[in-house]
Amino acid sequence: MPELSRSQVVVYGAIAIALLLVGARAIRAEGSGGSSGSGSSSSSSSGEFRISGSGGPDVVVDVAGAVPRPGVYRLPAGARVVDALKRAGGPDAGAALESINRAARLADGQQVMVPEKQPRGSEPTAAPTEAGPINLGGATVEQLDTIDRIGPVTAQKIVEYRDRHGGLASVDQLDEISGIGPATMESLRARLQP
Image (cartoon, rainbow, N blue to C red; front, side, top):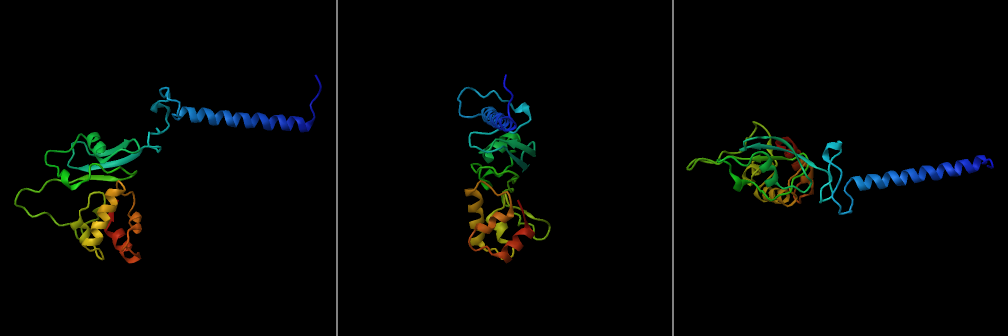
């Protein structure tokens, strides 16, 4: 067998490495549920996150308020608030479901706050003034209106933006709403939590 020159060894080595990289990439694509249509053989016990049909990683959300099992839950990307409620045992009998958008898509890191119904004849409680931050995931227009530099129109825009985008992962996302400038953002950061 003839001896290979140094340059031939380098070329063959580079080809071998390129083939290994292409093969590894193909195996990884097949393992993450490529478009093969033959049931996915990868299981969630492999330690990797699952890729859902919507094309993103799982989301982790905090479900709190009027639910039997409040806590932090991992759900597939594209899941809705109603899915998070199911994982937390469903809403309690006293839950004010009309206060939340159960069809909104969940965002990673979002808190889903399920408020309780007010007893008949009682006045709805006002948002905490200085007691603590308002939960952006479940804040009403009235609660948002209590924040300095936020009026009812801007509060309504915030709620509509939140519902349209399936929640908010950060207060900084509100910067995209017209009428919210730098001074208003500072007020929001001080009074809201995602």
